[in-house]
Image (cartoon, rainbow, N blue to C red; front, side, top):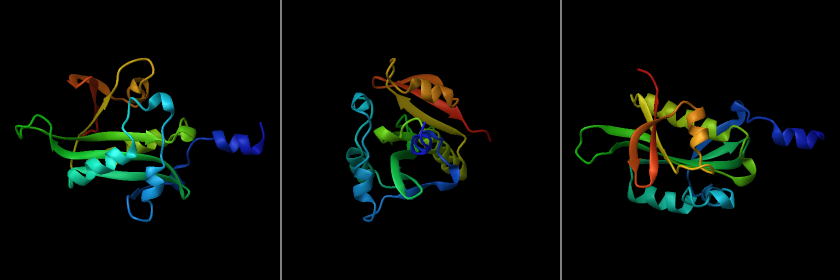
Length: 167
């Protein structure tokens, strides 16, 4: 394996990874994030997420995932939403995760989940929720591997998972 090929397959380096707020300066980079074609049915494009963030201010938390100045993914969290519509139990979690097609398998998804978990903890939360499309080509294995467990709930046709973040 050449040095360039080896570098392309090494895990993401935590020191070079960061989240950026979506601004005028990085909007086009965020909009350019595309998942693999076979994943497009399972996750909405970034443009839809940003439109939803616009109509849900204060709830949506969109961020560009950047590795050493290079955009590699997009995430959007939801923070303290009224999940059941009765005010009984606000929830926070990962709403969208889009890792660019050529950047998958390098630790960026794990970094995204850990970053959302850190933000939820910072705000006093103890659980991180996520939904996924079930099936062999979906992200269930990824989420289960990070410690999520199915909650027994469904959101439309998706499985609801939860990760306990501790007290």
